[in-house]
Length: 437
Image (cartoon, rainbow, N blue to C red; front, side, top):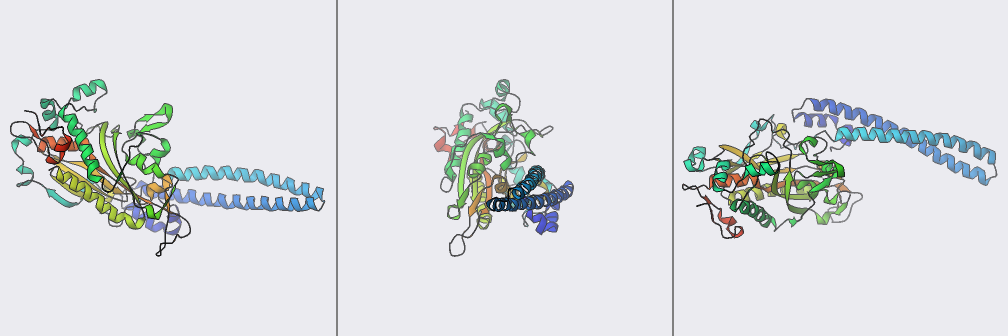
């Protein structure tokens, strides 16, 4: 959530920042927040004044009883009881108004970073690194590489979408044999590549409503999540969700920041908005494997961490021999929780399109405010200062299997139809260096 105090201290800046997202409805949401916040403060002031009066009357009642004035004490006590009922009503009104304000805050997106590029759609996302393509660019791929992975995988017996659909439903996939080994190898390689700086965690993949709300998936993206209503649990769409909430409601020491975590997990997405979009093969699936990297940081550490995390993902993709580029997400294409965001895309010659394989994002304190993750700041001399501050959160897909798997098949397909396994994966492939043949 954004800080409601910004509405009071710099309303024009909030309006201007949200306007960069290009959503005309946001201005009316800001108006609603202002109105609710004003009403909440009014109720709070009235409640506190009544509460103070009740406390003062209680002291006076005690004094009168000590002085033996029972009648006076009883009269004040009756007044106190009446005020107590008013206080209870105001307290209930306060809770109701606070809940209404929170409901609005939960759907208002984060404020974009000043350096995030302006734009209205993904067509406005600038390329900041690459594209790294073969000689001749996109036209430089050989004819044997221009076969889609769903045909390659089916022909080699390593992708069995038909039986996956039979077992589950459409848009579920199943890798077999060397294809399954390749999927597992990618995850282990991504974990090993980041183990120098990130603690590995194996979190739960079913989480509470509060946990899914903390990262911004709820309430806005409820239709895209798998719910287990009987137990009030949700299947995670990404390991970002449990990793972010590991320290929910806790206060960290500044000396422990940045705190870095990574996790392999299955991910589940209903892909509610996928109608009419390309869902063939591994391009879009309800369940897939992914390795996530995540950091909790101070505001001063966040920008450098973002650059580092983008670099880590790009180097990993490059080490797999995949043709790629890095784009920065413009304000009109930015996710609800994002403050600044970058995507790494690979070119799949068989699909003939750029595929997003990683999104690395900085959320400022937007998620931490929802989850109440704080730290104790230190001054320039390293001494604790009064109070606490919200951490900043960052996360990125170190490697998401489906599209990387697909791009490897298409990019590394040989003239004889076999697939050359990237050399960096050889230690993870049980001796398999070529798939097929």
